Length: 273
Image 1 (cartoon, one colour):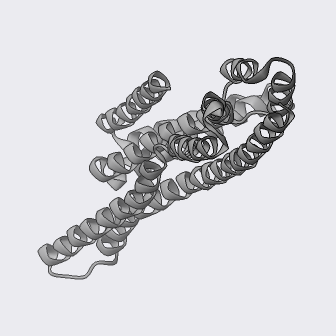
Image 2: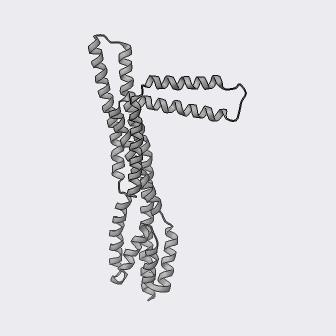
Image 3: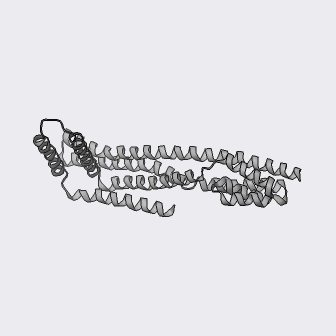
């Protein structure tokens, strides 16, 4: 998981570096060249409809969209836009890592309970421990800890299950606080960029000595780009955060139900003996 997180983070930083590098190319020239290229392609295209026409139109649309995103990124300022983009990259990296971890932690608890119960009936506690050892997921780990202390009494088993359940819950919620932090920081960075952009706009007004609509509108537009970007980043990460929270709650509920079932099975097994 750590290697996956590192690869995603490095890939995201490379993409950000490529976007920042695009500042060396004048934005207006790039947009003009793309527009002229699209116009030339439309003029040179035959009037008859062909199978390749929708694909070329889609490619040109993606090219224009990429150019517009690059333009807005540069207009918003590489400093604050880069910081907001970094929150998105690291937030998504942590979110993807948690999604993979929680999906791997999700197991068929009903099937595991049946296997453990059969093992208890046929081979006793050691056979049940072997079943849990070969299974993955937090439920199997909790079962193993409880079965390992089955000879010490039901009270000890219950305490062990509760204690180790708290440990597994902490592992499930790992890094969620960082995702929540990125959700809060992204809009703050956007607002900070907006405030600084407004200050720069008023500085231009003060230098010219006149309130020009062009200067005011341009400064406000550039200032608000960072706010919009920060809000978009926060919305994206919020969806992932809510999904992860619901996933953790579902796994925890299954852990609690399965733990109660394990204690009942051990009581039943001891009564049979």
